[in-house]
Length: 397
Image (cartoon, one colour):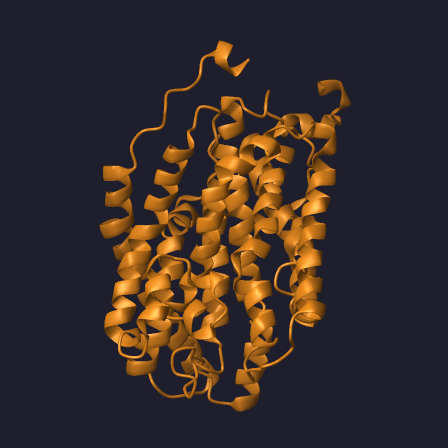
């Protein structure tokens, strides 16, 4: 098989897809996680209405024209940041998987990764703002991360609004032990075809949302009707295609079948993808517009780490930010939607608005650091357990 691999790919190809080399640490992907979380933050912080108090705005910008322009420009950040997380989840879980990993062990590691931070932020949100107005039919599914399976907007976007995406991640984690077997068996020559099939799946889900679901009722601040928005964005099963796409990307990098792209090409693809997301109608701008640029970023960063090339995301500050990115993602639902609305009221000129935005960003980073150090790390270390010992060469075949 090696003879069929172009020479420019051989430098980033591990010896085997299931070899230890295929699980080399990829610090650049850790660092890139914060970029995705920051995109979501920028989207939330420029909203013209507060999800938990629609009469109030989250933007600090007082000039209506400037506020609307910023809301439009950053309007696709949240969509693309979430899509990046979903694709990256599939990539990382496949990359780190070993044949001897059992389903219970995988589930324990992943549940311990998401539930401690979720439970803390859920409790804070309930105490601070959600408890008095959220019925048990909404907060109970939210607590167990099944609320995005329900189409009621007060449920799937309730309590701590960013937590809706954890329903999708939970579904990915539960299905991963079943999905990894067929994905690992895909012949290398068919990997690109399977990746293309996953993209077709994304298109089909967008078409179903556009043409088969009711286009009413409409909410002014949403680009689609409530049924369409729920199905194409929050409902977990359609988002599986992004996760599987990420799994296949990991196999492509492992097999050395991803062409090496110059960093400027990757940046150009990212800019083009974001521009497409700004002009394409919903739901096609939720994930389809930039999923190929997202793939280029992830694969290029992974290939750079494998080849020993330094990237902007592999430095210690970037990796540290990446490590707290999950806590940062969850805690912004409190610092932005509650703290900003209660204690940093008012709209201001653009320079003052930027300074206040920076202050909220620093507050969110500080809260994320505390959540990561006080909750996420101790729970993972205490209850995460050790991975099974590596399989012998005979068992690996």
